[in-house]
Image 1 (cartoon, rainbow, N blue to C red):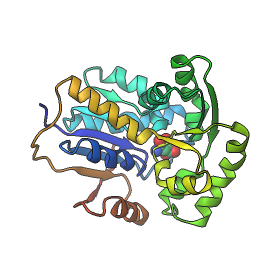
Image 2: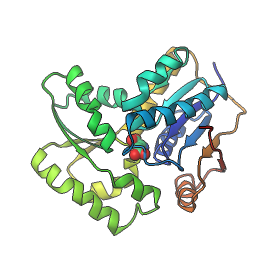
Image 3: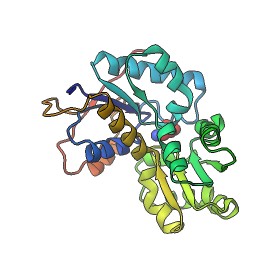
Length: 266
Ligand code: DGL
């Protein structure tokens, strides 16, 4: 048993979709969450900048005595996972991409679409990992860079978002001919309503949910599950925008949820 909290982070509020999953799958676990709302989106930034920001956050979470780090961000996973693992070899650091790929391949999928940020698609990490685990798999990728800023602006349930999704997806879905789609960004579960309405035949894989299944398996295997912890979940953001507060109120409507402002040192 290990009652220390789990550190979870993202460029903003997308990673809260993983925290929702964590509460569902592992209700005994406690969380310290960091959303880098002042510097979001990461998906259009250079690898050096993404690695620098992610390292600052993980340094902070490790200093808070967390037992595991969940990178609830595909962009950081794609670009910074290796360097973070090198920096902290003794702590399990879990990225979102490998668990999602494992699930897709395990389900026997042979043709798949991937949507994600520019940085994630540019790295082709999904393509590489899918092909490594399932040689010959047919992977179709599309970057959807405007979705994250719209979510962070609080425009998730609007016609603008629906049009944006259609802008990226209509031709991609028609020409790709796949029936399985990976949501390769932890903000995208928030647009599931639009995706289901527009493309009802697509089966969706959520990286936000798969990473929690992997975390659960690792905690069990290492005998590190929490039980009866008295730690209270802590949520931090580098900027307290009204939108961020409104989104978190919506996502965690039935919990006692408070966000604290925390800027990390450059
Ligand atoms: N939720 C992040 C991801 O999974 C969004 C990255 C961004 O800030 O652009 O990639």
